Length: 377
Image (cartoon, rainbow, N blue to C red):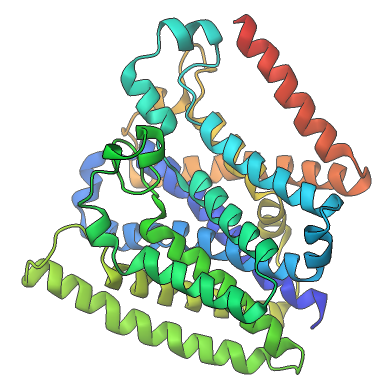
């Protein structure tokens, strides 16, 4: 397997990252009345593929990157601590994005119960961090590849198939609310592990098969089959889901339904296949895609800071334009945010590549400096 062929992973993750910026801008700044227009349903469907793609490719990329490092992980060498630190950093970033105020005084004296419900809510980063932690622990503990794949498959099925029943359970009977939020979409939680962990499990399994077939040069055949499976899942699951929901009225919440999962997994397979074939045709993705992909955590964190932090004369950008823009202006705003993120991602990646310890020193410096500012404000 040639290293260059793995550009399709960067392409898929980069596309998900750029569309995710558009999702956050449109949801926060576009006039709500425009949601009733016919075209918005198509945009909303495309936007709804971002999280499944992002979670799936996180599992896929982890499996690809970790396969050659298993002995280092199990011996608790440097790579073990590096991977552990990355998972913790993803978790930390997820919670810091929801911190009520960047001030210890305001958090302890002004923040309300609702603020803390938002802080502890589970977004895509916490979902990814927990999923990666589970996969990481399993990879360390389960020596047999076959047994590992069986366990991941069973966990993926357990996250998806009974999800409607999990949603009816009040997990706060057994767990503190900040733990219960990981199981069902209570309060402000958007991405509980049911059924979203299923996408990560699918990514891990898909990557394992890809690695297996790549040893004999069968990547092309695998991607053709994946393209067919994805098309079949999407064409069968999505119309059936909407029919059962809108006409048969069998359910109202689509997210825990297995057809929601299978339909979007089919679309994710299609995106992965198209990314692969694009890179086979054109080679490495454009820098517009490449650097936001490689620095996806930094881009994710920084673009939300740009949108939500009250640094613009005491207000955030979305407070200045709260669901008040037209569609064109919203897309222009999204492109402007992307234009700001691109050089940031490029410079950050360059410094990390040029100076071996720059990334770790810079991240820890920002955390320590930020903690000091937080405590003093």
